[in-house]
Amino acid sequence: MPIISFLLGVLVTWLIMSGLLTQGFALLVRIWWPSASRERELKVDQWLLNNTSEPSSSWNLLGYWKDTSQYRQACSEMAGLLADKSCISSQDSVLDIGFTSHDQLRIWLDYYQVNQLTAISSEEHQIVNALEACGQFSNLKLLRGSETSLDQVPAGSIDKLLALDCVYRFKKRQVFFSHARNVLRPEGTLAFTDMVLSRPFRDRREQRLINFFGRISGVMTEDMPVKENYQNILNQQGFEQVDILDITDDVLSGFCFWFGQHYQELSSLTRSKMWIRLTLKTWFIRWMLHRQQLKYITIVAR
Image (tube, rainbow, N blue to C red):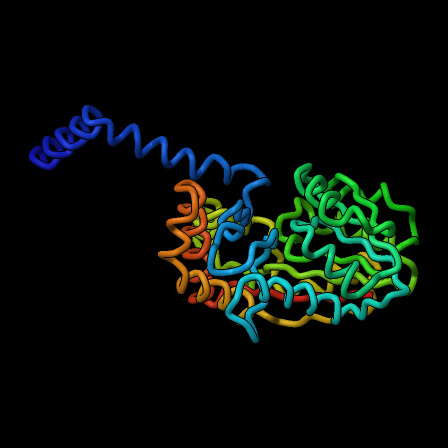
């Protein structure tokens, strides 16, 4: 035991003197500290925009990989899936909450040709980019805010409320759902995608372990609902008809597979800090899928 203590002391002294301990601690802070805020979850920065193997785009989603292996197409397919499930038409007044790309706004405006589109984002640069890319659409209204900012929208004025690949970043889902019910017309539709737990935690130890790894990797698990509880959550907020579609394999598994296929290519295009977080995030998703504990779903509620 004294020998082990001596060797450990020598190792710690060497790490301190060499500066490696300080560098390692700084790296840990850089990874952990962004994860302590709500701004951290699954932000992919500019890493996909600089991928020279595909056309440039502003997409920032996990993607729907059922019939494609291209990132840009996978994001377009995810937007199309949500639009089709919610039965968007050219007569609809649509609200897009938490949008992360002006490309998805163009889907609603150009492809589905909605009558009126209100889009809300908490990020100023998203508003600016959307204004530059979609400013020619007179039926587009851009607002800055969060999921709790729906009081900017007149009550009972929206036909379809969309939340594409962003609900798992919301602070309180129940608050969002209650506000959503208020802005929707009586026959209106709420359509969104979300990341959820497939089962409750077995015990406190499992809960702490998953929350710890989730926090490091940038995937918020503390407030994640269990899939089987989602219908009750929405029923309590006044939504009577709730349809849930499990698309885990075509989203999470597809994204992880694509990331693995382009690992080396993306590593040369991504800043080191973001690259570490992306790698940790992908590892965490794979680990949770292996445990059969994570699901990705599409929900349409009326």
